[in-house]
Structures are given as C-alpha cells and as structure tokens.
Length: 521
Ligand code: NAP
Image (cartoon, rainbow, N blue to C red):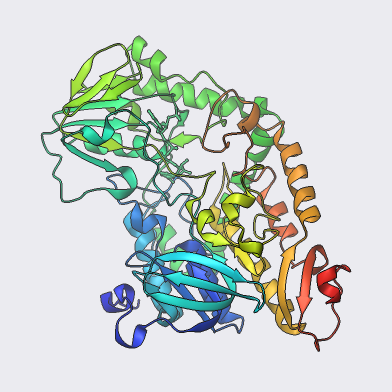
C-alpha cells in the first residue's frame, strides 16, 4: 500500500504549485465528488484540469467532520468508489478516520494530486459572455476555465441556530462539523443542541467524558438499531483476494437498500416494519416511560432522515444526562434558558444543528449570463437544475450533488459517479463538436422540475408530517431524488445534447441541437 506523503496531501500554493492562468476544466472541492471527477477526467483523456479546495486535504465532509463517534451510516462496501474498492474496511459501517484515510490513499494512488491546490478559497466564479469562459477568482489569484464543475457538497456549510444570545455565551462553543479537539471535555458541563445524525453519534461519546450533559431536542428523530460489526477474518481475506466476492457483497447491499425506495416515495405504509424496529429500539434502550415518550417521534418514519444507533438511547438514560424538550428561549453568558424558564449553566455548547442545504452559499458567488447570480436565479423557485447537474443561464457549469440528487436510503457515492459519467459524456461531445458553450434550455429544466415536484407530492418527505432540511422555505423538496438510484443512473448514462442550448465554434461541424438564436449565430 502506498504511504501517504503529508507533503503531497497538504501542499498549498507555494513555489511551483502556484495557480495556472488557464485550464480546460476547473473543479471546486476535493471531497468524494471532486476527487472522483479528477480521477475520471484523467482516465478519460481530459488531463487539463485543476481542483481547488479551501481545506488542507482531500475528503470534504469526511475531512471536516471529526467529532467523537463520527461514522458513516451507509455500509462501507457501498460507501466507496466502484473503481477503487477498499479491502481494508474494518467494519460494516466505517468510522470517519477510515473513510478519510481511504480517500487520501485513493488520491495518492491515482496520481492526480499534482493538479490539486489546497488552502485556496474560491471567491467568485463569473461567466464571460463574449469569450465563453469562466473567470474563477480565488484568494490566491484568478484562473480562466472553459468548464467549471462544482463539487462543494450539499452538507458543507455549517448552520448556526438563530437563538438569542448565542454570541454572548462566555464558555466554549463549536459546531459539530468544526470540532475543537484542543478543548478537553473531561469533567465539563456540556450542552448539545440538536438531535440529528451528527448529534446521536456525538451524545454517547461525549456522555462518557463529561460531568453533566444536556441534550436539547426540538424534534425527536426516528432511530433504528445499528447493525454494525467488525468484519470477520474470512471476509477481509475475501475482500482482498477475491474481487468478485467484494463486488457481490456490494451488489447485495445496493439492492437491499434499493428495496427501501417504495416506502419513501410510493406509500409510507410500506415502512411499517422499519417503524416497528425503531419503536423496539426505544424499548430496548430506555426503561423510563416518560423518557420513552419524549423520544418517540410524532411523524411518519422516513420524513426526516432515519438514523441508526444502538447507544444513543442508553446514553440518554444515564444519570448525568438530561434530555431537554422544552425548547430554548435564549442563551446567556453562563448557559441556556429553556422556554419553561429553567436555566442550565454549562461550560460548553456543542451546536449540532446541521448545514445550509436549500440555500447553498456558493450560489451567491456564481455569476452566469448577464451577471445574474445562481442565488438570484433560484430566488423565487428555489434550487433547480436539469438532472441535478446543469442550470439554465450557467453555461459549461456542472454541479455534482446539485438540486434533488440527495438520498434518504443509499450511498451518495453512487449518485456522484452517475453525475461524473454524465459530465464526461458532455465533455466528450463538447470536444467532438467544438462546442464553446452549452446549457439546458429553461423549458427543459422547467419540465424536469415539474415532473420531480409532481413525484414529490406522494413521498413521505413531503407528506409525512415533519419539517426537515430536505424542504426549502416554500416547502418544496429541492434536495432529494424521488426515484430509484438505478433510474437516476440510467437517465444520466449519456449526455443528451438535444436538450441543450449549444453554441459551437463558427467553423465547427453542425450540431444536432435545437434551432435557437444562439445555435444559429
Ligand atoms: P440535521 O440532521 O439537520 O440535524 C440538526 C438538528 O438540530 C435537528 O435535531 C434540529 O431539530 C436541530 N436544530 C436546528 N436548529 C435548532 C434550533 N434553533 N434549536 C434547537 N434545535 C435545532 O444535522 P446533522 O445532524 O448535522 O446531519 C445533517 C445531515 O448530514 C444528515 O441528515 C446526514 O445526511 C448527514 N450526516 C450523516 C452522518 C452519517 O452518515 N452517520 C452523520 C452526520 C451527518 P429539528 O429536527 O427540529 O429541525
């Protein structure tokens, strides 16, 4: 196994690693999306690319989320690139350090890191109408790119709660995605705000260290048992020496997860067995009837992300842990005041309140045709794209994990790989036909989203009786994919140029795209 050189992974732009003036393709973000794109660009003969990331390494969300207990709730075998299987997973659900190590190793072994620049913050991405290129401004200079691919992630910008007085708190405060490892929690009084996927992993770990823990629950999550275990020796040997064994394992998990789709998108009643398992999990983990009632959700399972844990409920029942369900009225310099007036003093507040999902901060910094920002384009309708990847008014721009590409049941890596294949197919067609700009027509994008929103109506996410980060401020689900993942892959298997407004170089061979003014030009 290749040893990872710290130098290679953490190299920032000094000396010979300065930013080039111009590249064919610029990729923003070096998580699963950016890294996978880079590897595939290289493999498919598009070596002229640059990947920028503000962090110090590859990994994206897995680099940033280092909180105690961080682990994936999708099976390890499925939560990896299909083209870079990992025989070294130690367990069925991988802990964060293993995923981060996997991504770093994959980056080194694929030989693409010379085109990565870390410690570079992208500030503005502006389309030049006349020259047909993107000007990418960063805190380390500017780069011109014909094509921009954003892989900056749907869950990358931490969201702080709007709670009066948070800034006045005199103790330590940090977000779950920005854990302060220099601060020792041992013996401290701690509050965790939020009971989502991050919180339920943090709570059992933190409860072991602290003198007192208050867990602030606004809405109870549905929590299923976590069927996590160490891989047996024969399994590990199989993964290493019998590639078909690992592929079969992965395929089995994939189809197992896909069976959950009807319960989310066709009829929530199909999720009744999952509901029973989750209720049993409460019974098994908690004996106190009052606490059982407090953690029992009052909406349909699947409406919010279904969580998995074996130790969250037992942690809540510990003597020194309190579940607070009265709501937060305000935060004072010394602690948190609940809506019933009770003040609980603490040394530390851990804010596990999630991410900006339906208003992506990067959208304010991408300026397409006529200088219009993506945030403005999305202002009224909310986030929309065509096939979750391309956006009218933003030529030659591809978003990985764009609108309506998220999943409630399976691995995002599958979606990411589907989008990468679609983008590669686009780049190939652009090259063959000397296309200088392409973007979906507004009508095509509109029709795609009408269909999506129509399908959304009957999903548990829209009708399950809860509020969640899946829905935007208009109540539209602009984050999740409401069909099977194999349908998504099939729809993106080849770039459908005929749905795009295309401009080719004037002396280029004719294209088959619709007769628009721009094509005629
Ligand atoms: P989240 O699921 O959005 O949960 C945020 C929590 O904070 C919710 O319980 C929310 O309550 C609460 N909250 C938000 N604002 C609040 C306020 N003002 N006062 C009180 N409570 C407030 O965020 P997350 O846990 O970081 O997870 C986000 C996503 O990341 C997950 O859904 C998942 O997709 C991914 N993730 C995955 C893993 C994994 O694979 N194991 C781990 C972590 C995260 P309400 O429910 O009432 O809004």
